[in-house]
Amino acid sequence: MQAALPNLIPSRGSSDSNSPAGEFPKAGEFPKAGEFLKNDARGKLIVALDVSTAEAARKIVAAVGDSALTYKVGMQLYTAEGPQVVRDLVASGRRVFLDLKYHDIPNTVAAAVTEAAKLGVSMLTVHAAGGGKMLRAASDAARAVNPALLVLAVTVLTSLDQRDIEQVGIQNTVRDEVLLLTRLALANGCQGIVTSAREARAVRTELGDDFAIVTPGVRPAGAAHGDQARVVTPAEAIAAGASYIVVGRPITEAEDPAAAARAILEQMG
Ligand code: C5P
Image 1 (cartoon, rainbow, N blue to C red):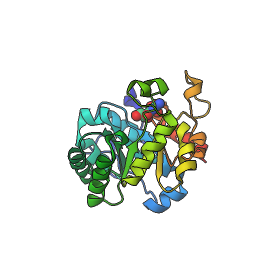
Image 2 (cartoon, rainbow, N blue to C red; image 1 turned 45 degrees about the vertical axis):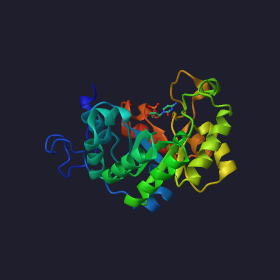
Image 3 (cartoon, rainbow, N blue to C red; image 1 turned 60 degrees about the vertical axis):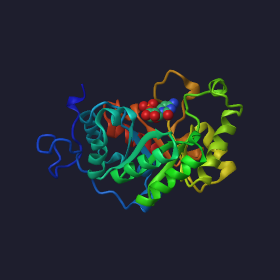
């Protein structure tokens, strides 16, 4: 169905017909990381590659073109294709957010983080609920390979509500649990958290601006959706304090992914 998507990135040997197998089309010229993140909304947009093959991922990346720089590789694509898809994305000039949500004993997580850092990812996730020792082991391991690698702690999954967290023995409200886990993550060397935009404002108010907040569950203003109450627009997410927003299907399933990404960038202001 997606076979007809155009490759919007210019030549440099990047078309499907003359690229070596596995290669992503090369990214265009992006400003250097520091400036880029400050001055260009593209630095705040992460496109989720929630697909099962590298080929599907390549089609999305080609179709998005230079409208986004950072791609999230999560457990679906990673489980299907392994680390090569990450290496190929990095080699193409993209930033990779490796969202595997590590949660294990400190030694095991540190070893996995070391391997992820060696792949060249820019951001990765661990579960804050893994505890302070695990978070410290993860952030130390990342720093040893690449001091610029952002280790992000997942706080409360956006799929969980108050009843769900009570079922696993948490007595806090979702908000207080997010704050508790954020404090723990920051105290143990993590440079940011993943949380819903609904909690982002409280996190900024209580804990300041000196760390990254990544928010998923974002839908463009005016987009069709089944559940009004759960929708956060790009502008609302940024206003709530998000440093980065993760957007998947509104871009990857759009007829014109580049136009969809550009519309979101405009809404981010
Ligand atoms: O829904 P969408 O396709 O934009 O999801 C992109 C990513 O955001 C998913 O990979 C998922 O990890 C995350 N997500 C989330 N909570 C939601 C919706 C999506 O964490 N409510």
